[in-house]
Length: 263
Image (cartoon, rainbow, N blue to C red; front, top):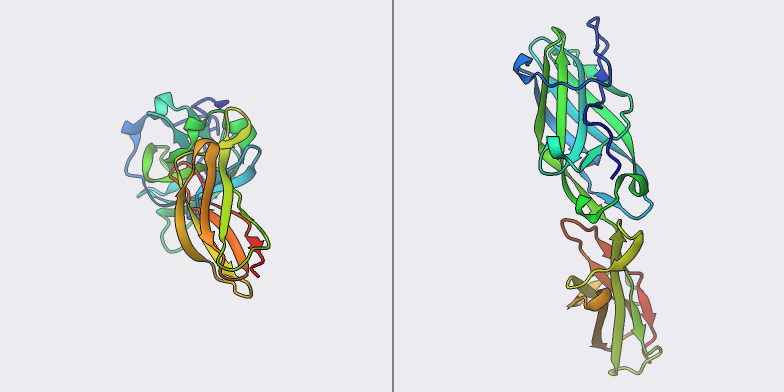
């Protein structure tokens, strides 16, 4: 991953008379902080950030900053790695402009928001970047005291997955055996391809013709190269599909239903 300098942090300017420090500075003097707290931290609306090989999307972080002196500026970003001094991933790489709104009822409280672009091709160059990312937030109060701290909560960044399904033979006589095959793959950011995901459960589901509801038939574990294969009995016309619910590092996937005509 191409890392931006750790000092590059987004300042979310509040409309106050207090001066705001340059957006390229980073708070390092935690001892100077006089009580800024952060809460209500939400990344991407609380949804997982699922990225394929070339996914581009906008990620938003929202939070509340409180300080007895009032908040002059606040910032937040995501990081991944052992610690902030040795992070192997930092987002955003190129800090955008954000905003903070001071509460009319309580001038010590500001609601803040920052949005930034994520480009899987540019920002993710190894698969170890999937999983939990931490949120670091900071603030400057109206007396120019700074606080920066890791905030409780994480954002889950996952590799995009795909699964296929093919049921045969078709048509088939009622009571005969149907073989359903497929393949489970996921984005490999290191090779730039979708590669098989082995040893993972996928549920075989069936939807009767004329119905909108799928029912579970059985669970199949993916084999070498992510291959899926199982059998079932032909009972009535309908659609077969595999469903993969995902893992902490990989997003969910649902195959397109494959229709079988039972005669």
